[in-house]
Image 1 (cartoon, rainbow over the protein chains, first blue to last red):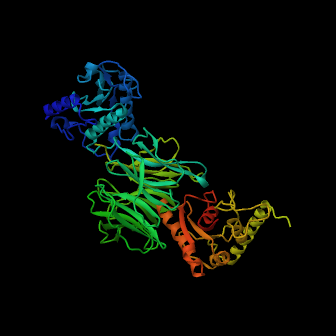
Image 2 (image 1 turned 30 degrees about the vertical axis):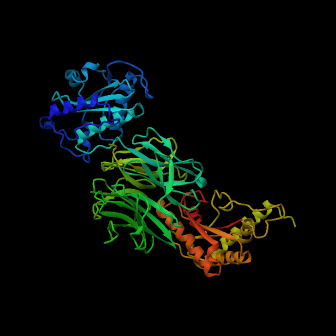
Image 3 (image 1 turned 180 degrees about the horizontal axis):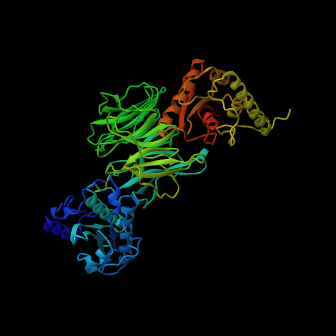
Length: 458
Length: 180
């Protein structure tokens, strides 16, 4: 197993064909290394934060210029380790130290750590890495996780990336460390679509924007001439569905990220709202308002075909989020007189209400793990909450004046949502883990709402 | 009589207050009409196109004329999470219909809105439902259906900017805007 791993890594470092090479062994599971008492879940986070993780500046064989925006390979090594440390720290899972204030391993030490030094610094875990510039401008990054007490390498990975994607290599490293220590699926190497908001409350400009999961590589996609709302990344990141007032009437468009062109998802003559993808990207859900009622429709993402109506009133039926297996859809309806959450089969059959607690319940999103549904609970204030797919175990994750529209991290461990300030109406994107304890505001250049978290990138 | 634009606007605002006060007296439940104008009223109407005002008052049959004649009745208000057209709304819509019948070539868009205390997507659907309720009532009064469009802005275009009951009551509205 270990030899395969090393061989695979060697192969990776010499391969030049793949632009986005990834760690070849998702679950290395070297049994000897599992004796470190790491069998805790992330929901039970107290022990995690006590785990001392030292993250050192990534070393380089030669400090040479790169085509990245970080500078030379030496500077890039530092930047890479900072991204790894920020990923692990900002999500509240660990309290890593470094790279500032820690010894910098030499290139030769990356695969032969000085365990004594790290033991004396009370580090339990050690992350080391290297960066090398390829002749064709590509960047090669290696990442290693060591158990200091066991004096053992737990996992390693290597990635070759184009210069513009250097941060992805750091996110892959953070994902590898996170997955190895927590047993959970990775999520850092992912992107978020959202709505950037500027201007006064009465006439606020709302633009479609995207960013990496840590807020980096921010980019506006629309000018703000037409109001944009409620984006959703396609599972392969090639498109974004969103609502635009482009032709005066709110309608769902599909924005193609390769061509920057957009097309109407359905020509209905009626307003279309609340776009959603099926997990396999083959179907699109949208809601259409007509004659005072709103219903949910399903249409092929490839275009063509007759839209199939999944709900048939009464009232407002809107949204819709597929279960990970694509068989069921959780959605919102006020057919009972107030907004509540319902589940149906993907063909619209067997519709049944699942939210039975006080207040209203809205914007349900099925966890990628399948075990939870995140939603907005409206009872006085608006709060983000979770429940099981059968409507049990309701728990609030946030407690503020107005938090709404949760979106799941790719691994179903964190939700992002947007928070509106009373009075000013200023919106900002926040995230919170399933414990409800680790809450954090995301750095965005301007006001931000409607986050939509995409899957982990391949 | 001097009928400058500013004069007609101040008249209109005054009249709006009167209408509002009257509405409060009528409906004791206080479903909608705010007790007073909000602290930051913003523009007097949600729609802008002023029309051909040449210093002699609004051109007859223009949007400006419609706004001036309606004296606040271009907007109807709704209770929390509601979209029903009550007696007071019917009065306002009756005045709108009268004007629209007088200018049969005019088309209008009814803008539906919601207050900020709801989720974004639902409020878009709710705004549509409110605009549609107003449209249906106008049609029942004889206005040609093909002349009336609706558009919902959900909670995205508040006219009263506070985060309080009075502001929310002002924002739960359907505004008829004629197209010049």
